[in-house]
Amino acid sequence: MLRSLVIAVVLVVCGPAAAQTQSSGNLAGVNGMQMYYEVSGEGDPLIVLHGAYMNIPSMGEIIPALAETHRVYALELQGHGRTTDIDRPITYQNLADDVAAFMNVIGLEKADVFGYSMGANTGLQLAIRHPEKVDQLIAASVSYDVEGWQPAFREFLPQLTVEMMTSMPFAEDYKKLAADPEGFPALVEKLIALEHEPMAWEKEVRELKAPVLIITGDADMVTLEHSVAMFRLLGGGGMGDMGKPLPASRLAVLPATSHTAVIGQADLLQNIIEPFLMGQTPRGMFE
Image 1 (cartoon, rainbow, N blue to C red):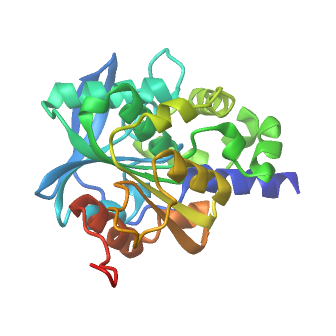
Image 2 (cartoon, rainbow, N blue to C red):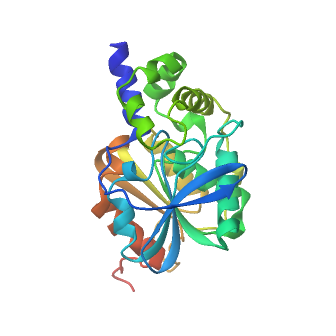
């Protein structure tokens, strides 16, 4: 039973297996690390941030889908994929500062941001800490408070150990891309610590200026109530058709979708993301 729970947690943080062909990329010196990134497509700039234990390939088909209409900058965060680790905790604030520093290094003043899971929380902190750098934020499987996590996930977290994670088959996959093939235990230790970091950002979310598209599965790691609460903090949840414009932020709930199934639905995600980035809304009867 315990092994099954470990596998479930691994799937929660890792997402789907790689679905896209590896392409050549670049390295940028960012806050003492060498950050790996790939650029594809043409159009308005869009930064893509992966989930915990993931990398660019494991984000699947959503990156090439978004690159059809955007200049996509896909990043690998501290200790993940081909990006080096440094002697520093992994926190959402640190990761957000890394993204801001990356933008400075490559001369990107402002961009839309799409993040999934850990990447979504990183994108949220980027919008909080560096609002001048975020045009619009797409946050898939995002949370702003630990109270928003599903009870089953919160109950299991204290049982999660480095030894459990390093014994999993995907620990060997880490070595195929890692800058330090032996660095996985240190990464796991930092990511477990990340799950125990305090997180209560309601005030900061309420004060956000950038429009946010919240995407969640109806069986996600985050409760539906939490996603709705976040949408209301951003000015959403009221009735349309009353003569007032809809709020800039939006909420999308994917049906029959667990946490790991969110990122694998590239076509559905693209059909939700593109209208948001273009500012398009369905026309009502009174328009």
